Image (cartoon, protein in one colour):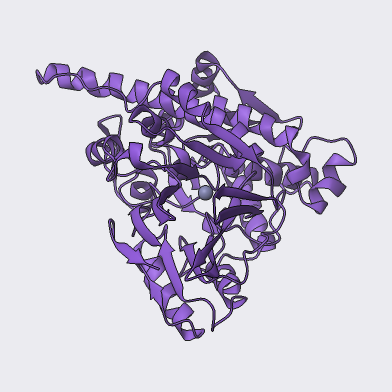
Length: 465
Ligand SMILES: [Zn+2]
């Protein structure tokens, strides 16, 4: 039994881990790497392993850093099935098509520059057709049901409470004739956040592959966060500015809409229009509406039972067409624009940032993790000039980062998960999906709890279990 880590190793993007067991190779996640443009393209184009050699893909959830390179995997010879919960399959349908569209657009832009330099054009990482072909490999699974993957290898998906459809995956195998339980957390969610159910932790594990995004940070309590959001909104309205929120189309957008809805209903923010400008977010919101079973009890009590829609209210407009999106630039009264992508690496958010970054009355509100070398991270670094679409723009708008909206467990949440495991039984903890300054302190905290064998694998590193 062997584990090897390729992506999401010492970084938060591009998750790809391979488990070799009973002569089969199981890929956990096939995420898209995000970072500097050129490195990104090269790293995503070529896999560190042969896609044809993979027998099966298990997918924890539909965020692009976990599923975004699946179409390329299929294009390069992967023939197996892809197991994911049915909400994840629905969301991937939207995410992967959208991702393909963005790759095609991006390559058009890059090729224009290459042409000027007399360089040959490059191909998009994958196309919409490739994304559609990849969807044929998906097989939907149910939470809590145990599936036999291969003789002596079984998998069970449990709700991770991170985004709609998200799962932690339990793999039950045999080692030296005895049962061996390997857990994969995917992205671990938080307790008591709006909309989603609390995470259903994997237990009694012999080894775990665990995310570490916020391994060294504690999120603030939600009441404080709501009040800060309300204060920020009130100030911008008073100044006559705009609020631009880059947000993951899946999960974060719906959470922000839900919170704004609540603040507005409680008269804590003034009456102002809110635009969700992302066709993908619009479609993803449909998937949320179709899956009320995944909602937690409070959401049921407040919205579903009263026949209200938690994602739609009077002041909210969903923007679908490019024309409508462009018209937002002409709106001069205070308003909020929520648009993808979350790390501001592509999508319509780039236009809104370019158009609004120069006005000190405006607020750019970052509500998720900003990975190294992404535009979102550059915005937080206090630079005077920021490059968007290849041109420098003076950064005069206020930039606030509120990680507290994160769908990830914080340090305490990650440690709570580890603390319920058996000190005698849990032989290995592999920390993935985290940058050094988060994962290394977490490693120490886990060791302090009494678990000695904690690893923070490098890209390509192999472990024999
Ligand atoms: Zn995620």
